[in-house]
Image 1 (cartoon, helix red, strand yellow):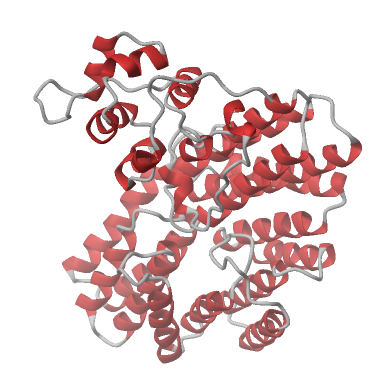
Image 2: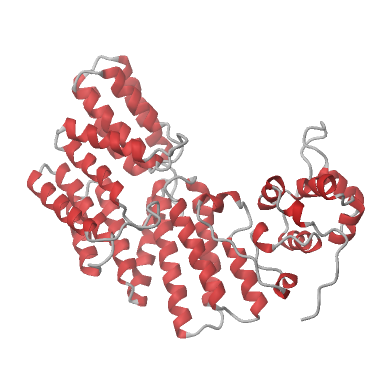
Length: 450
C-alpha cells in the first residue's frame, strides 16, 4: 500500500497521549483540540485550517476559550466534517469513536477494549452504530463480520448501561440501533448473517421494551415486547423468547395481574431452561406469591431460583441487564419478606442492596434497586412508629434520577398505604401521598408507538 500523503497539522504522539486532548477528542470538542494542538504541539491555526478545509478565522473562533465572554464557541457536529478533522489531524479513529481510517490501515490498527460501559455515554453522538457503518463502507459489502461484532458490542454496552443511564438517552440510543440494524436487514446478507441481525434486533426490542416501560409508555413497551417475542420465535432463539415472557411477567406484576404473571412465568420456563432468565422468572413468581399472601409458594419459588442461580457461573459483567447476578438475589428476597411482613429480614436485605448498589466513590451504580430498597426501609420504619424515617426514606427514593416508574410506584404505594393507615392525621403522611399522586398524574400522557 502506498504511503498516505502528509498533513501539515498531524498531531505528534506526545500531544495525542495527553489526557486533556483525548478527552476533547472523545467529546468531539474539536475547538479545544485545536487550542491544545497549538499550545502543546506548536501547530498554528493556519496549518490546521489547511489540513481540515476551514478558514483560519473559523478555526480561531472554535478554539477560543469558553471564558472569554463571547459566548459558546462553535462546534463541529456533521459526521463528514468530523471525519475531515480526524483525517487532517491524523487522529486515530478509535479515539473519536469512528472506524479505523484508511491511512491507519497501512500499519497494525490500534484497538481498545471498552471495559466500562460509561464510555458509551461519554462518546456522545459518535456511537458504535457509526463504527459499524464505517466498517461496512470500508469493506465495500453489505455487511461483514467486523460490523456484526460492532453491533453486538453496541447492544452489550447499552444493556450494561441500563441500570444507571438516563432513560431518555437510552431510549434514543436503542431506537438508533434498531433503525441501523433493520436497515442492514434490507441489504445483501447470507442466511447466517440474516439470523445474527434478527437476533440483534430481538435484543434491542427487549431493551427498548424495558426503557419504554420505565418511562411510562405502556402501550409502546407492549409493542416492543411482542416484536421481541416474534423475532425470538422466527430466529429459534430460546433466550430471547424467555426474556420476552419475563418482561410480560414484570408488566403483569406491576399491574397486579397475578394469573397473567404466573402464566408468563411458565411460558418463560418452557422457552428456556438454561440461562439466568430462569432466575428472574422464579423471582417474579415469589414476588407475586407474596402479594397474594401465599408464603409457601414464596419459599418454593425463592428456593428454586436460588438453586438455579447457584448452578450458573458468576458473570463477568453483573451490571448487564439481561444477566442475573448473585448480588441481585438480596433485592428479590427483600421484596418478598417486606410483603410477608417480616420487616427485620426485609430491612437486612434492603441495607445490603443499598450497600451493593453504591460504588467505592459513593456513586450509586444501581439507583433503581437502591430506590426500592429505601422504600422497603420506609415501610419497615412506618410499621415500627418511625414516621420521620419512613417519609424521609420514601421521599429520597422518589427523587432518584434514574427510576422505573411502574416498579417504583408499586412499592411506593405500599409505603403510602402504611402511612395513611397508621398516621391518617399526620400532615407529612398526607404530603407524601400527594407527592405520589403528582408523579402518577405526570405519567398520564397520550401513548405513542415510539
